[in-house]
Image (cartoon, rainbow, N blue to C red; front, side, top):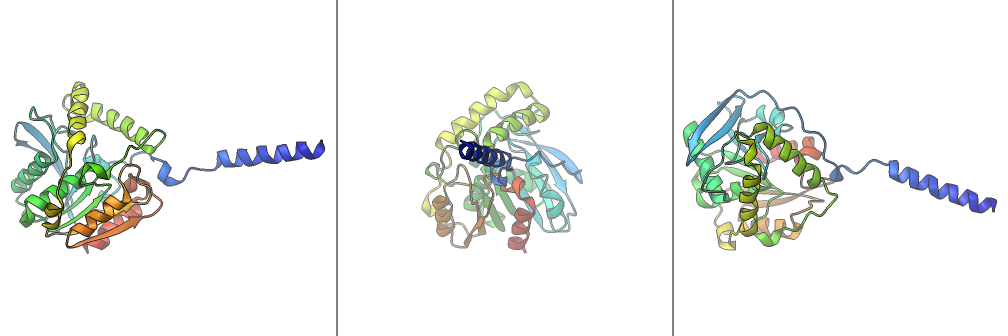
Amino acid sequence: MKRLVTAALVVLAMISIASAAPKPKWKQLSPPAAMPEPTRTGQISVDDFTMHYAVYGDDQKPPLVLLHGGMGSGDDFAAQIPALSARFWLIVPDARGHGRSSRSKRGISYHRMAEDVLVLLDDLGITRPSFVGWSDGGIIALDLAIHHPDRVDRVIVTGTNYARRGTRAAGKGTPFDAYYARCVAEYKRLAPDPDALPTFRKDLRAMWKTEPAYTDDQLRSIKARLLVAHAEHDEIIRRPHAETLAALVPHATFTLIPSVSHFALWQDPAAFNQLVLDFLR
C-alpha cells in the first residue's frame, strides 16, 4: 500500500511539473511591443479610400516597405522597426480597410492592395524599394513582383501562400485565437469607422475563399531576389507549399525559422530581424 501511495505521489508530482512547465514560444503570443514614434505619418487618397502610412528613419537610406498581415496594421512591425530603421528608410502602410486606412466600397483583393502600394510609392517618389511581407502582406509583395518587376528590388515573405491549396485550418487552441482577439481590439482602436468591423471581416473572408491564385508561370516570371522564410511550426501554411514557392521563383531561397509559428516576427523578433538584415545586406 505504501508503495502505491508513493507511486501515486510521484505521478501527481510529474503531472504538476508538466503543467507548470512554460509553453514553447511557438505556442505563445506575447503582448505587442510598444510602437516606435514615426519620423512622420501621412494619408493619401487612393481609389475611393484614404490610405494611412508611417515612415521611419532617414530617406537617404535604401527604402524598405513593410506589409502587414490580414486584419492587422503597420503596428504589426513594432518589434522590427527599431532594428530595421537603423539600416533602411522604412515605409509602413495600413492596407485598404485595415488599421487607420478607411474602407473601400470596391472591396478587397490582393491585386488591389498591391496597386494601392504602388500609388503610395509614386506619391513618395520611391522607384524600386525592397519589401518584407508577412502573411497577407507577403502575398501583396508577390503580386507586386509579378505585375511590376521594375518596381521591386528584393522581397522577403513569411507565412505566405501563393494559392489556396497551400493553407490549412489553424484549429482551436493556437496563437491564432489570441491574434484574432488582438485584431478586433486594434480595429476598434484604430479604424476610422470602428462599427464597420463586421463588413470588413466579411470582405476579408470573401477574398480568402478564392485568393490567392497565382500560376506557376506567374511565379517563374518574378525577377526579384526572393527569400521564403517559413516558420517551423506555422499553423496555416504548409511547408511543402512554401518550398515549392521558392523552387518556382528563379532567384529564390528557402529558409526555415526554427521554434516559431506563423507569428515568428513576434515570437522571436531578434532572429527574424537578423534574417531580414542578412538577406538585404
